[in-house]
Image (cartoon, rainbow, N blue to C red; front, side):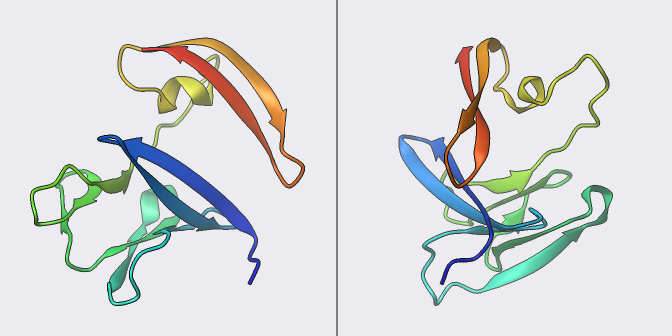
Length: 120
C-alpha cells in the first residue's frame, strides 16, 4: 500500500538503515524490521514528535536516543536545534568538523529535496 511520508536512509558502520515517516514527519519507524520485533511509541513533547523504538532497546540518557542491549553500534534517536538566522538546516545536520561545499535543490518527481556536497 502506498502511504504518504518520507524515506530516510542513514549509514553507519558500513551498513545502511532505512527509516520511514508519516506525511507530517511526526512518526518515525525503522523499515524492514521483523514483524516479531515489538515497538514502543515515545512522545517527545519538546519537538512535537512521536517516534517508535524497539521495546527491548535502552534509552541513552539524557539523550533522545536508543540502542540495543547487544553492545552493537546501532542507534536510533533524534536531536533538534532551534535555528536562528543566518544558520541553515544543513549546518545542524552535518557531522562534526564538516563544511558544506555545495547545496542545490533536487526535483525527484515524487518529492523535492536538496543535494549537499560536504567535506568532512
